[in-house]
Image 1 (cartoon, rainbow, N blue to C red):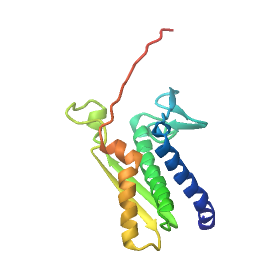
Image 2: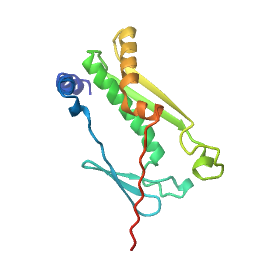
Image 3: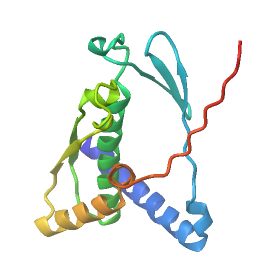
Image 4: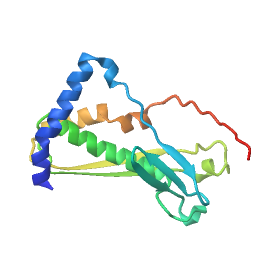
Length: 176
């Protein structure tokens, strides 16, 4: 993995710097919309299409699912972890900080009384998140702290879960 990473670091850095330059020159190029389309299947199983990728989500058997894939809240945890890892990689590359390996563990606590409408005073989402980032690097500690600051400041998923995001929800009904 190290050789492949080292070989692609220059290309990755060129892409990052080129994209930054293009957006500085024309800020409108920085505005993008991401999409997914989800279709309910059998029981709780849901199929998501993201670009050319397909993903299955489901509840565990304990919650009435068939365990055909991770649950939506587990996908959020994976999204946070992968975004942290990718943000660390991007900024380490741009800042010339050597990273041999990045591992991210994410845990989240949910009180199911909120989701299952047992107690409406309990929120249905995460009450707390814990993220552990393990970096393998020979960089000095001050560089790692600079990297942490950059990653904390610019990780999109960290921002999404730490700040309120306006949500416009529209429900359309079709009859059969």
